[in-house]
Length: 438
Image (cartoon, rainbow, N blue to C red; front, side, top):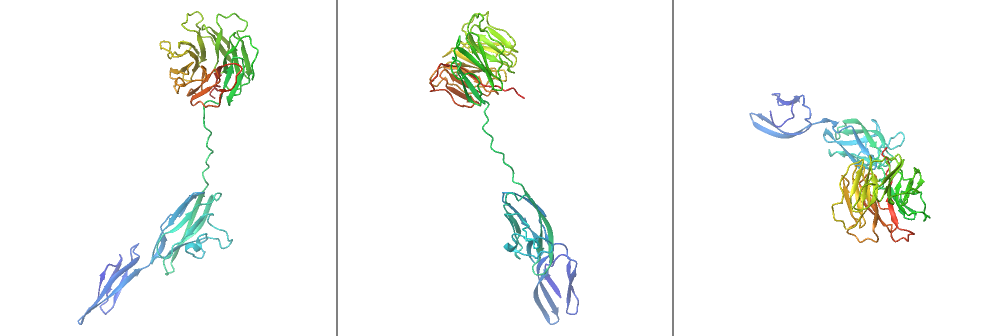
């Protein structure tokens, strides 16, 4: 007797010489399956053949991982795979002793002792049915179902009655918490405007504690400044009178004192515990913790000074012809040598030590590292510009006109204006709080 065809590794055929033959051996791993063979028997009278199929049965084995993780509210899927011959089926149960069930009948896996579903709401297990295909754990865990779920997955090899079971852990992760979208970030929390009659106007988060209507003054208001936290302010009049409001402390003024030229502006120290006043001739007057760094009081100017702004170490002045004068701080340049289409009306500094100067026609010019974000010079204005104020981080600025119109650039936010609002007196200044870091 002879055998032709491929036999599983480890198996041999022996002709016993008496009309019989023996298949024997120790099969190698993973040799389960069907093997077509042909047996030929020969004697003196001739030979005959018969075709057979040799079936090697294997114990079922689950080859996929014994755990997976889904997330609440998100679709998940996990394929369970096995090896077995003949091909069998995959099932799941709440315990090792659970009666095997297949297909969608077992989709929820209920604990027979309590009737409680073993899988989280929204997730099902669908077994295969003798086809050797994967089974699937799939679904979208319901919100609130986060936790650890333990059950058992079994594999069987057809009708041979051989099974194996695997403890399986499904972890459902809590849905990620999505923080609410932050409100748009603007470096200006608000801004305040002042009229020459001391009327004050606040926009955005600005808290202007000054007068809300016209005041009887010895001289018109020409400038203003905000405390660092925005809860106080100062106004200054052309005669040097200073008016403090909110948490802005009064440190003194030039009212009643002889001046060589009218006051045209003021600026506050970084900590808000002092301020400087500047006159049209460049004279500088200090109050509180403001330090005197120099002035132009004895210098002949080509044009009067129109404004000043503080830096971390000193201050800068700007004249109507665009000339800039730095005291105790770095000089970054000026418009003095340029032909201007309109006179300068104000200056504002940035945390980096740079500064921007503004013209009556809305032109803006940046120096010393300050960033230019736009201009109104090419726009028809209802009234001339009278001031400029930078945002706390220096990456934006606002311009204001004498009619109360406000124009925001860079990271400055527009919170409203007085344009088209009847005013008792023209607007003369704009201020933005500059909170100190930390």
